Amino acid sequence: MDGLVAFDPAITLQDRWFAPPPADARRSLEPHRGRQGLVCFCSNDYLGLRDHPQVVEAAARLLHARGVGSGGSRLISGDHPLWHRLADELACWLGFEAGLTVGSGMLLNIGLIQALADRHTALFCDRLNHASLIDGARLSGARHHRFPHRDYDALEARLARCRQPRRLIVSDGLFSMDGDCADIRRLIELAERHDALLLIDDAHGIGTMGGDGRGVTTGAGGHPRLVLVGTLGKAFGGYGAFVLARRALIDGLIQRMRTLIYSTGAPPLLAAAGLAALARIREGHERARLAANMELFARLRGVAVESPIIPWSIGSDRAALEAADILRRHGMEVVAIRPPTVPRGTARLRITRTARHTPEQIAALSRALDALRPAAG
Image (cartoon, rainbow, N blue to C red; front, top):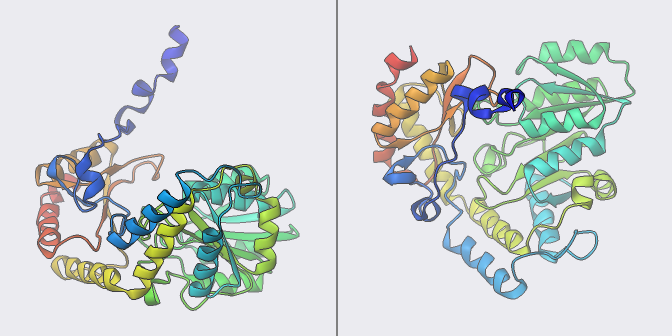
């Protein structure tokens, strides 16, 4: 039994131990509120759509009409026309020929990279990519090259040395823990110059960034080398994910993506919710409120703000936990982000603004952050 002690997570993780917060009704009913009446500044529900009446009503209609589950794999009995309609509308909105929906972003990225890459492929991945992209790359069997975060000169040097017959560049669009964006124009130039495919996961950017909420790839949609991944679980307020690309590539994924073929299809009620959320995003009311909150925060702090995500750098794991506790005493719910989610020595608070926050709450957040200066320094 003594040998098992080394595997005890409470001992091995120490300050990296994560205790899931208790669920409560307030959290589920009020996306801008957290536990114990705290104002939540750590949600990815950027537009506050998860309980929007139109989104809830659309899901409820399908729930009563078709029940809870799908009943099987989408390739057997678990498909529904609404999933195809949603994929088509997303592709049209973002400028692509075709799209495909999958149960979650993790399932999608793991299956997508395995379908696109093999031992004859060289993968070039930003070092700060999301875990789903990292795991997909590792499981693909491809040769995996990681380049420093947004260092496209280093990426080009690696591409120039590559001798593999196929090349795939993989990057987040809006980086979820850093709040900065990939240079899509430069990445497309590199993909063209070195005959590579470009995969962008813009889970956090679609709905919040770019022209009309189209994300960081605005203006590049439909490029023949671009494969775009998005999610229904953030700005859309629901659950699920999608990939957009050339029709021939999407048709191939249906035949090759194991996480699609061997997973139960997502409930059709989520497709109905996604369609209703897409309509709200395209109307723009929630996006305008989010933009106003981002501008207000930037003005109060006297800084440029690139996205809804603020990475408040701390350093050590323990100091990040203490900083989160300081904000909690100021009535703010913010989670300390620690390794392995971020690199060792870069623990931080990940703060998000949403369309549901009031100007008063944004101002209170700015004042509370002033209390962190000694702790963060």
